[in-house]
Length: 543
Image 1 (cartoon, one colour):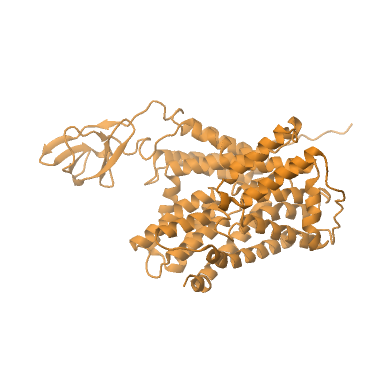
Image 2 (cartoon, rainbow, N blue to C red):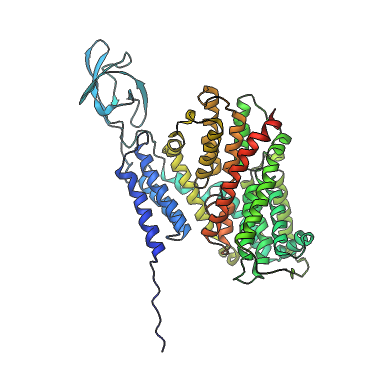
C-alpha cells in the first residue's frame, strides 16, 4: 500500500506572507509618524497587512477582505474596543498675565492648541509659544478662563471621528456590490439559457479563428462598451462571452489566462475614452469646471482616445508574449439556436433593457447600480433564476470587493490617504518630474484604493497647487489633472484594484501573479505614454 505524503499546510510563501503581514500590521503601532492621527496609524497597519496578504495570497483573498472589515469594526468603529464611550481629555489653561497662559506641553502641536467644543469636537487655535517646558507659556487673545483645551493632541480622537460599525458593514451592500450582483445574475441566467454561447457566435464571427485575433475582438468590443457604460457591468456581461470559449480549451493552455485577463483590462482601459466612461474622468472635468475650464465631450475623446488605443495594443501584445497560446487556430463550436421558451424570452428582455439603461445613463440619470437591481428582482420574481442558481453565484467576489471599499473608507476617514499624498513637497519638483510623481502616486494608490477615491484626493490637491501657485514654473492644471485621471484608470495590479479585476479572479482561470505581471507592464508603459502625450499631443488639443 503506497504511503501518502502529508500535505504541507504552511508553505514558505504562506509563512513569508503571514510574517510580513503581521509585521506590517504591528509596525505603525510601535512607531509614530508625524502628522498621522492615532486612528491613521491603525488604518496604516490594516492597509499594510491587507496589501501583503492580497499579494502573497496568505489566506484566500476574500478572507483578507473579511479580515479588513473585522479589524475596522473592532478597532476603528464607535462601538469597537478603542472608541466606545470615550471623550476628549480636557485641560484648563492657567492665567498668567494679560493674554499669557500656561498649558500642558502635550496640548500644543505645531503652534496650535485644540479648543474643545463638545465631547468629541474641537477647533484648532493658533497661539504664540513664549516658553516651552512641562507647562508651556503661550499667548493668545482668544483663550479665557472658561476655555477647555484637548490635554493631549495625540489622543485617539484627535483627527478622527469614529463612525458606527454599520458604515463598515454597509460596504457589503454598497451600490457597487449591487451592480456586481446584477451583473452576476445576468451572467448566470445567460449561461443557464445558453444566451452566452449565442452572443459569442454573433460578436466573434468577424475576427476569424486565430486565438489572438479572437482576443483582439473581445478587447475591442469590451473597450467600446466600457467607454459608455460601467466598467463593472461591461466586464460582467462580456465574461458571459469569454467563459464558454475558455471551457472548450485545455486547462494547460495559457489561452484561458489571456481570455480571463483580456476582458477586465479592456474594460479598465476603455473607460478612459469618454467623460462618462469611469468616475475619475467626471472628477477631473468637475474640478476643472469649478476653475472656469470646460472640456467638451468631443475634446475629451480627442485627448484620451489615442491613449486608449495604444494601451489596448500594449496589453494585447504583452499578453501574447507572456502567455502564448498553444492553439494555432480555434474554431468556435458553439452551435445552437436561441432558446424560445417564455423564461428565456424574459431573460432576453431584461438583458436588453438593463444594457440599454446602462448605455444611456447620461440621458436618464438613473445610476447603474439602481439599474442593476432590475435583473436581480426580475429574474427571481419570474423564477428565471431559482434558489440553486442563486447559490451558485460567486458570492466570494462580493466579499472581496466589499473589503476593498471598506479599506478605502478607513484610509479616507482616518486621514491616512491624505497623509500619504501630502507627505511629498510637490513644489520642489520640475514640471515633468511633478507629472511623473503625480502619475505614479495615483497609479499606486488606485491599486489599493478605489480609483474614484484616489482621484477625489489628488485632483483637488493639484487644483490647490495651481491656485496657490506653489507648483513652480510651467505648471499646467489641465495637463496635471489629465495625468492623474489617466493614471487612476491604469491601476489593475491586484484583484482588488478594480471591480473588473475581481470579476476576472472569480473565473478561476487566473491567479494574482498573472494579473500583477500584466498590470506592471500596463502601468509602467502607460505612465511613459501619458508623459509623452502630455508634452507633445495634449497641449495641441488644449490650446
